[in-house]
Image 1 (cartoon, rainbow, N blue to C red):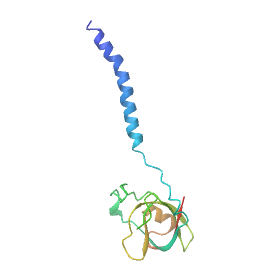
Image 2 (cartoon, one colour):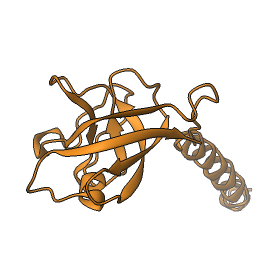
Image 3 (cartoon, helix red, strand yellow):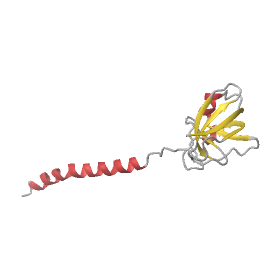
Image 4 (cartoon, rainbow, N blue to C red):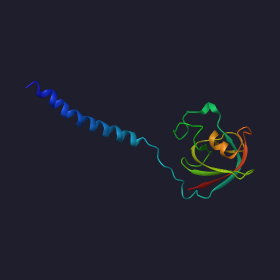
Length: 140
């Protein structure tokens, strides 16, 4: 009789392992990021002004949307556009553009309309310049 208990426990363990694995998969998949879309009423909205980029000291800090800031992501801060809004930012000097997602508030310096991640800024301008004249346009 004592020989059967280890055999029974072995038979239960795979079922338990499958159950725990499914629970972990459910938890992990529910933590995935949501694909954002711009509000249909805002599509086509444009603005012109000066863009800057975040200082390195903000790396991995929480943004206003709750996401962790990442200098290597294509994200930006805007004072009023809703979080998740997709924006095309075009450098008016060289006509290069990049698409970013708004996930933070700012910039908090007069005359600036958008703060880009360092990577997004580098796609359209020289980070040594620090500031560029841009046009932003809300897209899908």
